[in-house]
Length: 344
Ligand SMILES: NC(=O)c1ccc[n+]([C@@H]2O[C@H](COP(=O)([O-])OP(=O)(O)OC[C@H]3O[C@@H](n4cnc5c(N)ncnc54)[C@H](O)[C@@H]3O)[C@@H](O)[C@H]2O)c1
Image (cartoon, rainbow, N blue to C red):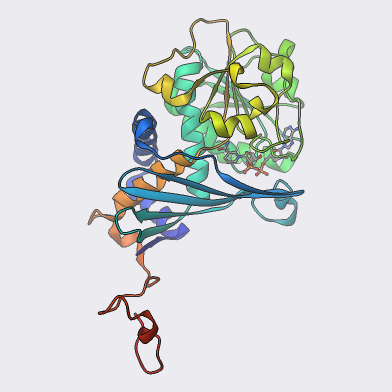
């Protein structure tokens, strides 16, 4: 069985180059969303606490089964810990044997941003130049970087009540080629935006954006609200928007649309990618992608990394770990652990 550590992933990315990797991620996600019908899908299993959530996110096709362990603890950063950390596993369906365990904290940030980009391709106006981002925590730079792959951005305005998070964001994107515009309020940040990303962490129902603050034809990508009772937008904005989600059964429980009903959802992302339903249809409508994070996205990521592990040029970035017993007689598990016998 293979293990991809954080160090292994960083070395792989250094070798591949970020541009190549990001392109591969976008292609893998699009390919998998387009074969939506091939997947065994289920809403994630979430265990809620007053201070956070721990989730298991399974997804499978006829060949591979994947599952991600992930949390969401908005109070963590005050204790010097990330809000979101994750680990993934990929198994062979025929035998049920796990093949790869992977770090998924960085991969989650990258795939979440790739979903933002794929949705923006179909929902943000083609001439979108100015992005606003509300919440400049761990996910934020990945979001901006991926949207740059699909839209010709020139500037990004940003707001976070934490000035250190604002400074960190500016430092990390200093060489992005974007004009960086720090703002003192959400209203100021979104005033001239063609696209707005909300990436805040708060375990409550928020109402971050007012309709009359927004430009006509804006695209909103709400990715910070992803649990029952943890939302970012108010009803007036939701009702004024064309709403697209990842996977209805999960989004209706966890997304912004938890406060509406199924009829409020225009489409699932795969329907835009396959052309079954239209995304943006004119320059004035408000579009909203209500992102909560769906297991298929993690399937795409961990399968992509598994494919790298099978290529001779990259396999050295993956460690071999002896986690599964290997025995001459597969029925002799007990004997394998008898004193004096060697377990592999
Ligand atoms: N949809 C998905 O697939 C997905 C994936 C990963 C994370 N998330 C969610 O995205 C959110 C952000 O994750 P993160 O890892 O960047 O968290 P983080 O804690 O690193 O950053 C969140 C930032 O939001 C800021 N913030 C809080 N309230 C705000 C407000 N009212 N206005 C502006 N900024 C505000 C905080 O100061 C902080 O800097 C979390 O809620 C997380 O659960 C969703």
